[in-house]
Length: 200
Image 1 (cartoon, rainbow, N blue to C red):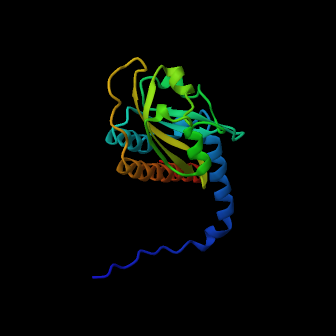
Image 2: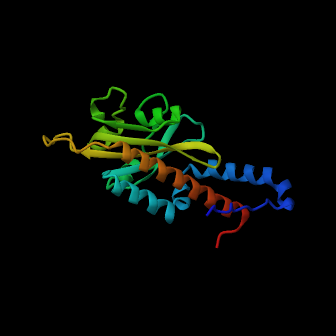
Image 3: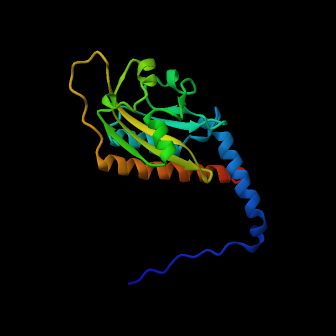
């Protein structure tokens, strides 16, 4: 039996407000990319993302957001044990590194044997005394604009002589893309609620 399409017609009285609402949401999203992101990125958004990291076997994951001058990506959330040394502290210039490449190209990246790749910027690994063996990086859009990258990594100690952990798969990347899109939608909904005063 064919399904009937669900239709909701826009309220005519809202039409004149649409440009102002869009502008308000865009501005709120821009301001949320700073230190206040943590207060926006709570509840389901954070739970969905951290469960994604667990499901794909990542040791940790990070939300990188573009700064006001659009020159560097700044980690604003990290699920790992060294998050305090990373979040709001380190900076990833847009002219180097795989995270920046994912942002600039607006394309996801799945890379295994990362530490052997010359494109990897080793600043984070050196700062946190770790070795990144595998990485996923997926562009994150919310507020009608590309605003950052979500990354997931598999790590080991630089001194370890153990084999590298298994790399990420194509299925892992596709799942991470789905979750990143979902997180963007959840952030958009939260921003719209706040801008319209609809939050409970």
